[in-house]
Amino acid sequence: MTRKLAKFLSRFRKCEDGNATVEFVIVFPAIVGVMLAAVELTFMTLNHAMLERAVDVVVREIRLNTGSSPQHDEIKVAICEKAVFIRDCGTNLKLEMVRQDPYAGITLPATPDCTDLSEEVRPVRQFENGQANELMVLRACAKINPIFPSSTLGATLANDEGQYALTAMSVFVQEPL
Image 1 (spheres, rainbow, N blue to C red):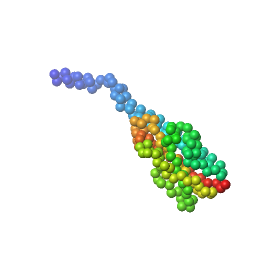
Image 2: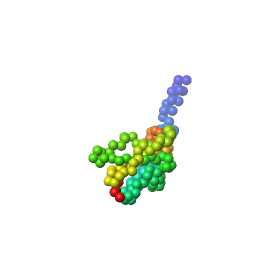
Image 3: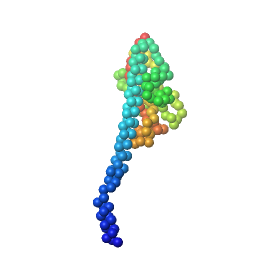
Image 4: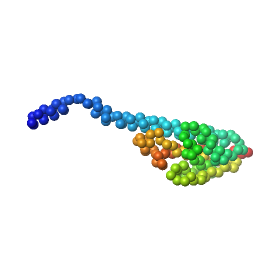
């Protein structure tokens, strides 16, 4: 009996059948995880670039339209029209615009004010139209749903109701009339 068991174990140790299957089972989840993370990061970068571009274009329009002082809702709609890839932009975007003293530095709160789906809608934190020649800071924060929320990167990024925050900031001077 012992001799048969030793012979069987010796034959089993020398047999290489299924070798590729074992390697596949070990490597495949890692490769799929890297691919999902790459797709997630691509869409995150695309959304962030679109938000940055939209904020820059809208701030440029505000600067060039001397004498006009668009309100919060007008600026939000303009940003959402330009940021075409951000889904549900109207509900997932929050703006903050404050006057700043150019000699004191920018004193915005460290944490951006973003839409929080777990709470009731809060009013705008601070939104002021500046007077002539005043330095204005506009910060936009958008909450984005991950493409693959159960993937490693999607689960790591999502911290608020399954969303992650992207911010864009721009500074401009309110031109005189």
